[in-house]
Amino acid sequence: MAMDDHQSKVQRLYDACDAVFSSGSKAGLPTLKQIRWLQDLLDGMEAADVGIEGGGGGERSSSSEDDDERSPPGRRFLSARAFTRITYVHIHECDDFSIGVFCFPAGAALPLHDHPQMVVLSKLLYGSMRVKSYDWANAPPCSGPRKSGLARVVAVDEMREAPCKASVLFPRSGGNIHSLTAVTPCALLDVLAPPYSEDLGRPSTYFSDIPIPSLPGFAVLEEADLPDGFRVAGAPYVGPELTIDMDSMYN
Image 1 (cartoon, rainbow, N blue to C red):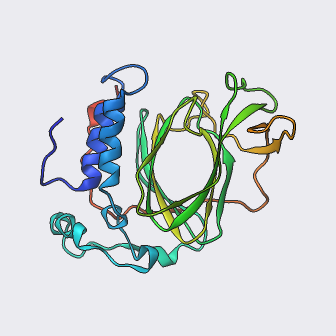
Image 2: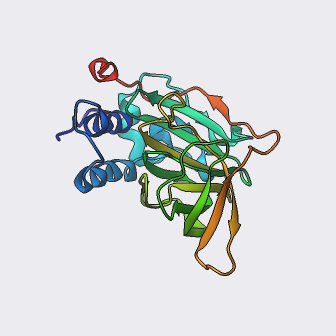
């Protein structure tokens, strides 16, 4: 799985995701070797590699200079200081995977939500956040009027602070249902495979959690409405241009 040394880091990530997740590549979950390959690529990425600067009070680092040299002259960047609410920077989406960045101001939170039938790889690009996560104790509850079920606690108030290794969650393990709370301004680069799709039975569902005092390490999760006024804003992607494999998009 050779990479072109002259590609931007985000292009390398896209090409790897296309190789691992595209419909024609293989069926089922990716192998451990493939997951580690993707994690290694994510571990090498910084905010500047996806067109964001100023994260955590810093500017573009010297390790991003090579990518800057390959970028068009006058390339602009989004300022981390400009995100006053949770903002999603859409980089790419096809039937098989999506790539994007969630940018948080300090104190903002994504409520508890699931990732049905998905593998999700995440890299904290700057800042710090707290993570609460669960996995279903049994098979995920079927879609109904309101989802609910017994869940096993994976993490309670886990602190993640950049720089840190990329994380991965799976359909049945790794903390598939989680909430994210920004301690400082932060940004999370996400790969979802496959992406959410209401039509294909992968809706985004939000939950409330009810601890069980008599059963430590478990909780009941009940489908919940989003908090009043909660909204994720959108921002344009201004990082290095991607060369897209059009054949894989329409397989």
